[in-house]
Each structure stands twice: as C-alpha cells, then as structure tokens.
Length: 337
Image (cartoon, rainbow, N blue to C red; front, side, top):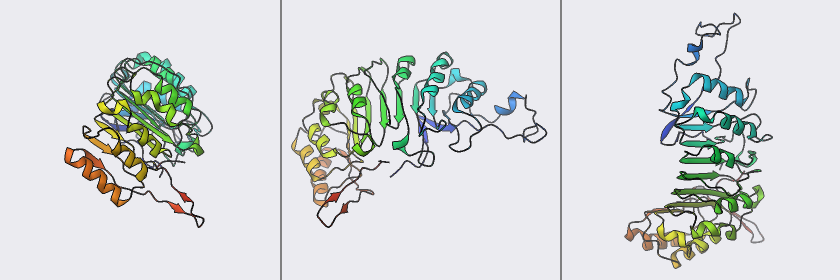
C-alpha cells in the first residue's frame, strides 16, 4: 500500500492547498482580466487564514516555481499571523533534495506565525514521490524554533536526523515512513516531551532503512520522558511481533488509553504475547488492523478484551502473504516503498 491522497485535515482543521500562480494571457493580463500588478486578484477566493490547515507545495513535474517561491507568494497573500496549521507539501525533486532550504525558509519567517500550533513536513503522495524515496534531513531545528507547536508530523525516513531534543508544549508527534532509521528512533526516545500525549511511529522495514530493534524503543516503553502519554502507536513494522512482546511488559502501557500495533506483520505469536502479559482491559482502544492473525486468535482477542469495553480493530485488510514452494513465507508491512 502507498499513500495516495493528500491530508484531508490537520490540526483539527480542513486542509486547503494554496493555489498555483494564475496563468496569464499573452497580453500580460490574468485570465480574470486583472493586470499583473493587481495584488487583490491573488487573494480574492482564499479562505480565512485561521479556518484551514494551509498546504504549501509545488507540482512534482514541470513546476514553474520552487517551494520557496510558492511560500513567498503565500506570505504575501495570507495573513500568516492568523495561521494555526501549516502543511509542507512537495518541494522540488524531493527524491534527490532534502528540505533544508524549506526548513530555512520556515525558520526565517518564524515571527510571521505567532499563532502556529500544528506543522507537518512532507505531505507527499505516491504520484509525487514514494514514501521511502522522500529525502529528509535534520528536522529538530523546526521544534527548536517553533516553541509553541502542539503538533508536529513528518513523512519520509531517508537521511532523517532527529537528535535528542526537548519541547515544552508538543502534544502530538508523528513519523510516517517505510523505514525509520534506528538513530532517529533513539533520538526520539532520548528526547524530553513533558506534554506529549500522542506518539505515532511508522517503523517500516530494513529494506527501506528501518533498522531499529526493540532495544532502541526501550526509553519509549518505559515512558519516563513522556509522563503524559496516553496514545502510543508503534506500527507498520516488520518486527511487529517483537514489539508486541515488549509491550506486554512495558511500564508505559499501564497509563495508556489507546495502543496501536497495526499495519505491520503481527501474527498470532505477537497477539498471544500481548494477551499473556500485563492487563489491557483499561484501554479504550486497541488497534491491530492490517495483520496476519488467524480467525481463532481474533476470537481470543475479542473474548479477552471486548467484555471490558475495549474498542478493537482487528481487520486483516489487504495483508497477504506469499508462500514459496520451499516453505518460505513472505509477509509485508502496509506501507513500504
């Protein structure tokens, strides 16, 4: 499975794509008859600045402007002092270029975004670039600069750097990838997020750079740097059974409201380990969707947790395995390449 659609909402607001430059006729006028210098023409049909999550991005192929030029137009057209949520879309050749200049532009414009509370880097879909090909870089300067952020998300793991950091206000942190580097996972675990309630990691596969082991998750599983965490998602992983086994005794689980081990190669072994470990009846929800469970194991999970009121997501979805003649079984995460 690949990511085929842009985000529909972010930060509790509907997403709105900042429009491309208006095409001009040969006489130098725009299609609506306005002259090139008429600034109002570019602002006329835009929503109120604080009513949407603004997506700023350029076309994958043949764009007439760079992301930075598009962002400059955005700054000119929108009252950014009112912007609450910002989504960074495609930048030029994201398969070859990381977002260093994008991050520099955002940091340079920091003072123009006093109301910004939600920021997502790389809302890029498969028609623009596959998730495992999105080049990233050191992204922590964004957290260091925007101290009022409450939600931060990133897509893509290639060359991603996330050294240990601290953020006083962040409540939700999401990493979507086909392969999250172990060094970045360790950086997340070593970070201090005293207000974080929601952590979502798509760990991916070693084929696409997701080389984290269960040991790298240890600081997250203890939860000592995440005192307010109530939702934990460790998903889309080829070591999903090992993760489930570790979660069965992880101290952080006792104070969670929701747990997500979906989108990976979870089998009966992992599900059985979860059921045999610490009680899960306090959870409001347990998400296992996209899995390799047998029908018998699904019934075991239901029998153990539904009477306690735990909302379960157990559908196998599109999870299919390939069986070789020699007995080799191939299973795949939901989002890889």
